[in-house]
Image (tube, rainbow, N blue to C red; front, side, top):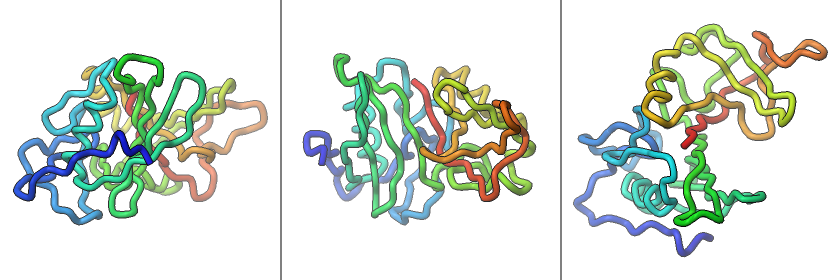
Length: 205
């Protein structure tokens, strides 16, 4: 457990503000784990995500959004450390940070719960093999590290708004899975593997 990072629960009269990277700054979110969380560019409640953001600052915002959230250490590699955030037994996100920087600066956040809605009908866990809110998608794989990028022109305006706000959001497969069905030697395709799903929303800081 990351006991030194456990958020302090707010008083009983407090609302859940928006959750990791959300815009519900003026509304209260019920404690029901199935409650959708609409996302808005680079916001956690009233806090704006920014480059070199200290891990503790992000922790505080998430703690207010999800009282009682559980924090556990994730896989670390090289200069990076990570923390997995869960609530009510559901995994919500993984936060990757630069372990050797002052304040442990956040590098990126992977939202993995279907609660997080980037746009209507667009959330982790959604199918990529049938007609969806993403429209026609193209999958591109980086041949060096095997990481896939899911291009979705139908939500280009939403993706552009996040980039302009300073924290681009990337559509990714789940860690350890592959979405694209590639021809031999190809690194991009419009074909998806059977059962392919959007695994995570990667928010880059």
